[in-house]
Image (cartoon, rainbow, N blue to C red; front, side, top):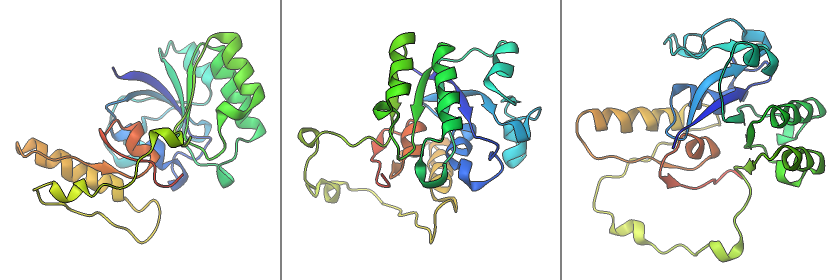
Length: 208
């Protein structure tokens, strides 16, 4: 079931640091973006700002502003990369505020919110859930490469790039959706956190 999400971008929505948010704005099977939290871009439509396509996703300066405008959400998603993937003091305050507002929190930073004592305490006190997208699975849940991919009898297109945030996932998403529109079976295999956040069925978090 798709959850309604508030997406936080820390005044970086118009930069590549917010590429996770960009992916969710363009569409997700897992989370429906109902609003963006970004003071620098407040008052605009996120879709129009991102690529000129209006998507009725308002941008608010703060979580409080979103609440005052009766935005209904289930989860608060960190949609921006911080320096070194760290949870800053400012971000921690914002996440605790989200938990106290009745929202679960999903985070894809390298620092894990489930290992931060203050954030964990706030989640427990408010009966909310925390989810770290990059948290490694237990060894018992992992397996060695089987080579089964060689049994897939279908064309495989590798989408590569020379750097981060150049549009690899977005390109793969557009190709997959265009093929589906033409009644062609296609599936994107993701290799990063945003692919999981978008709800694609197959893939893994390779850049953890």
